[in-house]
Amino acid sequence: MRFRVIKQIPIENLLIESDRSFTKINGKRYTFDKLSRVYTLFGELLNINLEKTNTKIAQNFVRLFEK
Image (cartoon, rainbow, N blue to C red):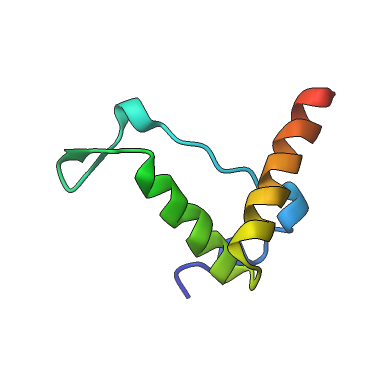
């Protein structure tokens, strides 16, 4: 039930970003290799494969900045 809200977000409205330079995980600096795990987790939660997750989120960013 921890991810109930995420499961309700339509993939067309999903954006993922990072506060990399300000974030620490277990006392260690965040690195971008962790971001791939976030994409994988979102795909699993939304029942879509990683390729489709990557494609849709990239399209969402493009659509956002085209306006």
